[in-house]
Every structure is written in C-alpha cells, then in structure tokens.
Image (tube, rainbow over all chains, first blue to last red; front, side, top):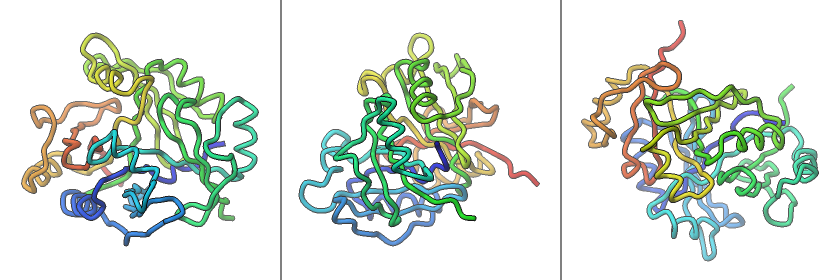
Length: 138
Length: 138
C-alpha cells in the first residue's frame, strides 16, 4: 500500500523564526509561506533530495495545531505523510482491518491539491499518519 | 549541508505490537529487530521507496527513550535524521553559528555503522534532529 514518504510535518509557534533557523543553521531551501485557511495552518516546505519537511504554524481561530502547541511549547513533530495510489481503496482496506480514520472519513484536499486523510494515532502507537493520493507518473 | 532524509524515528512502548500494526494495517516491510545496547534501544526499520521509518523501543535501564515514553504514553514521534557528507565539518559549522550539539559533541556510531550526532531541539523549535555522515557514492 505504501509509496514514498511525502513529508514530515513539524509544528512551530513562529514560522518566520523557524524558517530562519533552518536556512541559517542548516542551509535549507525553504518555500514561500502558503496559507491554508481550510486546514487552519500556514505551511512552508523544505526540499530535501528525497522528500520534504513541512513546517506548520497555526492560522486563524480554532486551528488544530493550536491545541498541539498548548502541549508542545514552541513546537514539535506533528505527523508523517505517506503516498498511496488510491486513497479510497486504501481507506476502505484500512477500515476493513479495524483502523480508524479521523473526521468523517472523507478525503480532503491537502497542500499539494491532492486528496488526503489522517489516521488515528492510537492505531499507530502515538504517531499521526497522513495518507496522500499521488498517482504514479507513467 | 543537508542530504537525504535518512529516517524518521518513532518511539513505541511495544515494538512487536507496533511492527504488527505497520505490517498488518499498512502492508509495510519491517526489518528484524536490532539491539543497540550502547544507545539503549532496540530498532527496526521500515523501508519506504525513498526513505525509512525507524521504530525504537527502550532497551535496558536508563534508556533515553524511557523518559520519552513517560511523557508520551504508548509512543510518539521522536526525531528526524538527515544525511551530511562530513559530520565534523557540519558540527563545527553548526557550533560556529551558535547551534548546540547534545552530549560531548563527539559523533557516536549509529545503527548503520556511520557517525551520528544529535542537535538540541531547542534550536529547532522542539524537533530533535540527528545528523548522520553518509559519504556520497561515486
């Protein structure tokens, strides 16, 4: 079922400062900030040769990552995202095996314009896993 | 400075059960457990096409991940590891820029037989970052 690791997401309380740390200390290439109000976050991506790091900052009231920051002052590791070829097939297979999908179980459109789903961290020993549908390039 | 994402490390309280979850729910390929008493952990690796997930379980008394599990019952995301070509050069550059290296600042040998260092999560907004020296293949 699993394709590439699409990204690792890190929540930060101050996106500008975090971008500076990655750029200045590690020489990272950081994208322009992208506001995703429907997800309650502003994101940037750091390109590594084989995958990406996503930095997330809360956006607006009731951002899901605001609650995370209450527990993890300053920031912390939030989730990993892995590619699947067919997200509805993956979802149905996971549900059939007893795994739980967050929300109403329907995919939403993520930062890259692809359908995404989040799985319950309780089924993966505390790690929040996002699945993103990425069609293979022929 | 940054090369590939070498792995994402997830701490779990029960490695056997966690391996079963990844295998049965996600169809993951999981390596045989490897005990690393000098690091106080038992590890397995899950191969993705572009990188690896590392699952860590405490090993022995005083394991550094036991303290993590006291705060994150059942498990959670622990660190990310990125490759660098020359770990001493990377370390000296980071220190010169004001970043902090954990421990005595000297690289230790990690799970893949390569020198590794950990950087202070306070310098990266709550994320623990490991650097691993991986020489480019010519």
